[in-house]
Image (cartoon, rainbow, N blue to C red; front, top):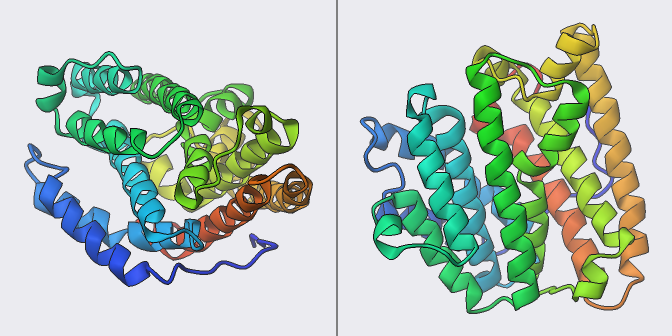
Length: 312
């Protein structure tokens, strides 16, 4: 059993966030162009993203919570498109959209090309809004994190098309980026207005927090999604990696991952105390790391997204 050493709690803005998320999703018609757009929309909303975000950033004022939630929702949608909705016969389309989003994040986007792709146009609007509130050093760092996510996600598509399973070393390296948790960690600063100065964000106490948060969250995610991803031929799952390359049975792999997640959460708790001793707003950021980790664990254990997985 996964044991999170800090309790989860939910934002008092949850009801408003739920209503606004549903309205925003409908207005932007994220799955437009897909034959089963209505079903995909209902399915995505049924995964309770607003619940997830209300628990990830429970102490944030509403403007920060709302913007961070939409940015992470966009990445979640993009992740679904790259993983499931755009099949291997649509590699060129996936590469094109990833290129457009990279151009947006690096300031090289062509308006006409972006406007023609719903996911690119949506990120363009969100990024413009973010630029109006976030400091330049945070924007630069977060853009690099997002681009790394895009690059490793395309690599994962190639692995899936080849029905290959990465080695343990390959998995651990790529999972930090395609798991999206470095991006979620950066959004803690946005949601809570806890902008870490450059000399603080690069301190080992802070960078190690993001690493432990990524390990605990992505490995736990692999547990909850194990059966679904194995059935889809997804090799980039720690349980699949361990059963393929380390000779473990499925039950042994699950047990090992639970032990690893619990160890990372305990270490994360300890490191949050160390980070909180740095100059402000490091203490607020550390508190946000604890909230995000506990909120994600709670959401993964309850969302309909993983309801069919026996390992949950």
